[in-house]
Length: 140
Ligand SMILES: Nc1ncnc2c1ncn2[C@@H]1O[C@H](COP(=O)(O)OP(=O)(O)OP(=O)(O)O)[C@@H](O)[C@H]1O
Ligand SMILES: [Mg+2]
Image 1 (tube, rainbow, N blue to C red):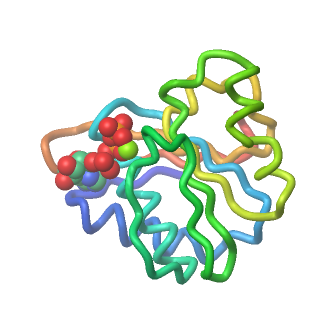
Image 2 (tube, helix red, strand yellow; image 1 turned 180 degrees about the horizontal axis):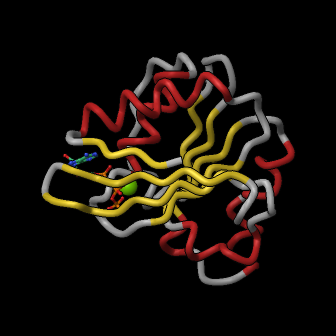
């Protein structure tokens, strides 16, 4: 499916609503470059799961854990992941088995580790405040 959002808030709301269908165990892989709305979307997911704390880019930490909502959400930034070894040491596979939800920014860097049931969310910039967001499931 495909939607166009015209503001940060619209993207966040869409993600908040999207979170309702999550059952745990999903990997959500974001595609799209800087400033597209990947962190914005993740903030919406966290809200939608009922997490009340801060959601910030895990660029330096690699992964942020948002626990306390309906399901735990693990927010990865794969920007600096360059090898399988990096990916293993990030804890990605352990988190994946834990039954929480994974949301991964810069998933282009872990393409080979994504399974067929990955939820891929791609962002395209239409103009300063508009984004085309494409959600595809099971076609990673
Ligand atoms: N429709 C929109 N949806 C989401 N963000 C938007 C939209 N229009 C404009 N923006 C702006 O785009 C930026 C998105 O920032 P965000 O941190 O979510 O991007 P990102 O994809 O995570 O980037 P990075 O790769 O640097 O982490 C914000 O500055 C936001 O205000
Ligand atoms: Mg980000």
